[in-house]
Length: 324
Image 1 (cartoon, rainbow, N blue to C red):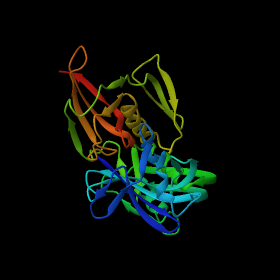
Image 2 (cartoon, one colour; image 1 turned 45 degrees about the vertical axis):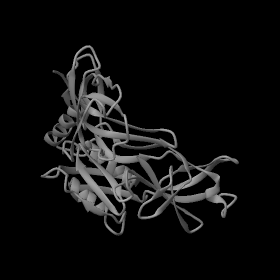
Image 3 (cartoon, rainbow, N blue to C red; image 1 turned 135 degrees about the vertical axis):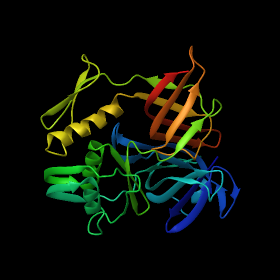
Image 4 (tube, one colour; image 1 turned 90 degrees about the vertical axis):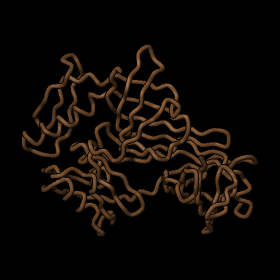
């Protein structure tokens, strides 16, 4: 698996990788390491798939015509077996970090659009709110709702003061068990329970798994209404409401409960698999423990680490494990 980084240094594009590659472009071996590039859904039950950018370490000769290295560069990071088949991990502005005669390191700091909204009231549906936010006068994205719930959940919410639009969308979508991500100029809104692709892993595709038992929840509360969790002695969760009607609130809480009361699965893959994405349903059989099990879970977090000598991909999500 190779990393493909298109980086813009002083208005000039450079095509660099962790190895020499002759593909659509010539990719020069100028990348020492890409670490902790992570995509993760903000809440365990939905929200913004917020990139948590890591760092890129370059070989200094990349900057032979641009030294000292500039304070900022732009980089697009992809991984794959071929240039045309590579998947994008992130597009980011990068700020200069540590550099010496052996390495030049940049920290990816993101490029997400930020816009504020003040003292607003929302009614209609979740999709209506996202259409409002994606308008050209605000975030200016194209909205894709192919995998959003039908009918879209109803919203009733009044906000005061200044609020970041992306943060509002994250909170509202999570409340109704949706998540969203941004790729290029398109914002994708997706139901947490939608299957955006089924993947089955063999025993050779991953290293030993860790299983974290589901949360012990006694009560979920929102807007003065509550539903019972499955563990009377568990903790209570209070969530800010995005509706005022009891039936709508309790329905939202039931969906949140479904997500939170599943086990948390963490799986390190034996190689980078660019066919697995956030929202995919992954199934695998584990024969490494005292009893054989089958697990199915929805991927809510992906972490990449790629260097000249090693590559790691860790996926995480909540799911159900059964004996076989």
